[in-house]
Image 1 (cartoon, rainbow over the protein chains, first blue to last red):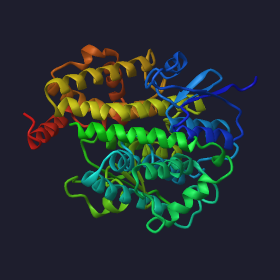
Image 2 (cartoon, each protein chain N blue to C red):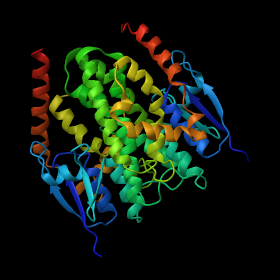
Image 3 (cartoon, rainbow over the protein chains, first blue to last red):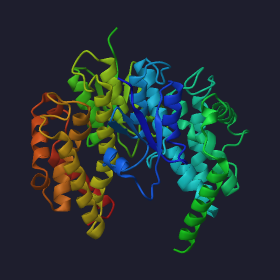
Image 4 (cartoon, chains in turn brown, yellow):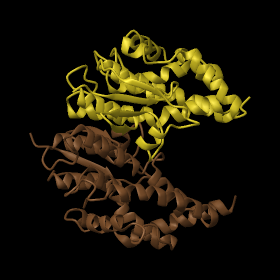
Length: 229
Length: 219
């Protein structure tokens, strides 16, 4: 029976790209359905009634939601080019670093950079920057002696943190400041370039001009809302 | 070589309890070390420098942090006894999804119930019950979320049950009235030694939260 794989996502989310990269790295054929989150399709609501969010993977009619759950499912279902290490301890470490760099509310890296540095100004931004630097330093140290977080080749943590390689420079352009400087974060800076230019990864970034416009609008809206309080 | 297992924990933590349940399910001997979260030990700070939180499992000197990551690690290392995750990838994905759901929702909403008042507390209660009802629906007619035996989602959720009495008292509502099947499930889980020996006495938890409310000036 032929496999039927569908991926529901938005054009702009660099987090949903984790799934695109994983499927392509494993050579899995799939169909993309782009969602407009202000007007969610009945299919999306049917496949993810709990959170009503993207990304959602539908494999032979069965839905899986939450990007890390989807990534592990992909890794366990299509076993070629494994993303997670075999050793249970190394696997636990990979899951830990992926969670640390996630886009969810509890994640320190994203929260401090996006909700702290990006959408704030002045003193609040300065304080958030200190926290963001501390969090990025942990990632810098994790790269010591390695080309990718996964070692010699791209793995689970690289895909999980891959959003940094695209979104950071967009946030830096829009906010007009440097977040990941080459002098402070030489390993992370090199990783961001190596990852962004890797085969498969480099073909799937969203259009930069559209991203700049989107995040400019987001920042303006957040700053305006804060100023009017 | 015998395994050396140390658990850094704080007694009321429903996250630490998850690890206790998993270790008990696998029949593992370990050293339990209580942390004073207002005076964290050098070992905790060394073993979890990123978050400085409990629980931390230290297995033969190597630390693992984050309760659900620890539970999966335990399940994978000691895989021959009482498997917590199913073997089918789709069922594993469903188990991970629901455990993640518990993580995303219950702690924060429960926190609103004991630490806020008025409208914020009412909203917290309402959403908390909605989450439990959704989980109840997911349980369905099965004895456990894991099917015939306790599994990953059971371990992730059951540890919250010893906080229910505190939530009910401070929130002035009855969880059993709203979610009888879920309460029946918690009682079924408590019949297991691995669960009953790992969860704390709900009255003790209530006393702990009362102390917290005094400290934070919540009437």
